[in-house]
Length: 260
Image 1: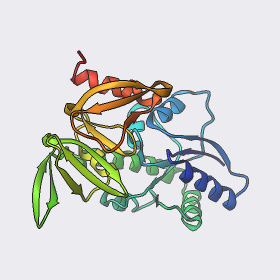
Image 2 (image 1 turned 90 degrees about the vertical axis):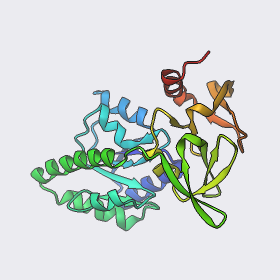
Image 3 (image 1 turned 120 degrees about the horizontal axis):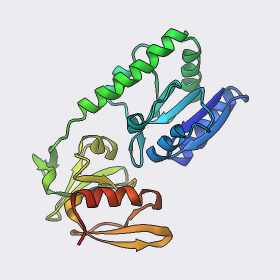
Image 4 (image 1 turned 30 degrees about the vertical axis):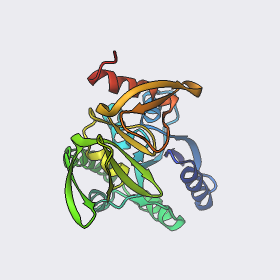
């Protein structure tokens, strides 16, 4: 069986490959793709080997992997992986479509593969249909959210995203920092925030930061053709845009906020 892995966490990819080989040494891991861009490029290139099965992380550094399906058709069965047991995924698990919750375990992978091998040709067709339905449902449910409830001292107050300069994660805690430099803890993951924030206003810069367009002050060229961002408020560490994501970031910024 030829297997393709879409996973941007090196440790998770290594773990999954080891698990697959322990289940069946004959499994051929074609390659590991780390981003939406790489996923689209792979499936657009007809010279690439066609996988019999795809393991796909839902939350990649450059967005939800569902966006790959906006650009290409994938006929291979897909087993999604995620670190977050969200309500949409609980529904997604019903009737044949499967996903694995991180950290992934050997028994989970074995059961998912056994489940897939039991599907008939017609069931596999329905399987792919349900994937498409789930993706569309995810898009519809992820309406832009403009107000979050946050804890402040002994109160719960509304925080409008128009006031947010950036979100960042440190020590597994997500914080929202406003344009007036106020800090609020957010009981959400960066991934779930990214799914609900308007894409034209917020950009997932890297694993640590989601930044607001209005907070970008200037940009510096960094080592290795990367970019370093300066915001209008103080930041806890440098915000670096990787070389691979520089074109996407420039397009996002200039399409709604032309640089002078």
